[in-house]
Image 1 (cartoon, rainbow, N blue to C red):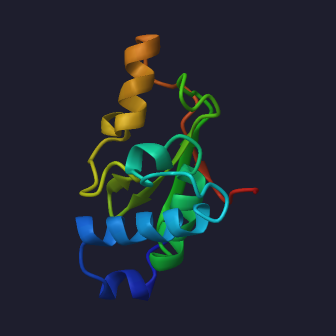
Image 2 (image 1 turned 45 degrees about the vertical axis):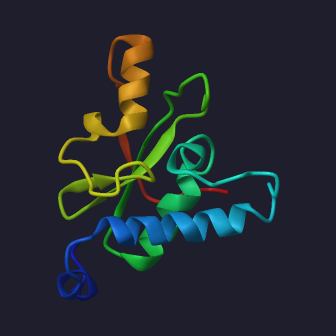
Length: 127
């Protein structure tokens, strides 16, 4: 479903994604104050779901997508956003046309030599 607010917004820029990353990092710093920097890679090793929810707060028409397939650094899987036919997570500030090009998914592929087979659209996240 496309919402009117989504039609009024222009394309998402890297600055928009970086702003959402900063919001996510600011919240997480309450729990992990020893981090030198909350990088996109750090975000995607346990905070991707929070990033995705913050993205959806700003872009209500965004869809949550995910997999339970993980990596050594993030064994619990990954959550990302689909918005206006592009996929976003903390590491894809310009969006990608295919979820297989998300860096986290590429790391899964490099480890397992195949893509996740459980990709699903998520209605909501349980924290």
